[in-house]
Length: 164
Image (cartoon, rainbow, N blue to C red):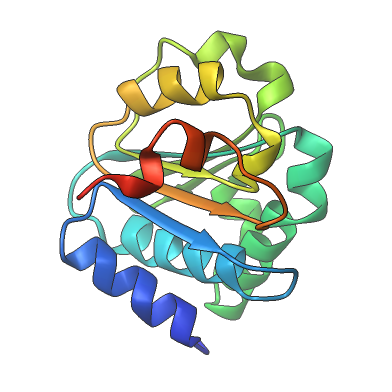
């Protein structure tokens, strides 16, 4: 697996126990890909059952980006997608971990669900009211990535200013 500087920094923040890990950058900055690489490694190597949710504005958005990237990462690591992936909903089983990709347009059914890790992909497209509910039901780490074009809830709600 080829790892970027963004991956190294993201992994370090995770290992140091940060609750929120935020990657901001433009297109092709590896923020999404690096986070997905880390999530794959966490899922594959977890000795206990875990639930990871990857959330973005819609399933088509995820399919064109994060899901395609995740599939490439898994194939590059020798995973057989037919054995680990269910296409509807987009759910992967890796070791003891379930990784599920969810579009915010279909999020109503999971607002009450708990998860261990949450990855909010292109967070600047998401509403704080929904994200706040998801964060409250996440027991471990919240990964956030976004393109820094405008101020949004990561700044206005003080998420980026927290010590953790």
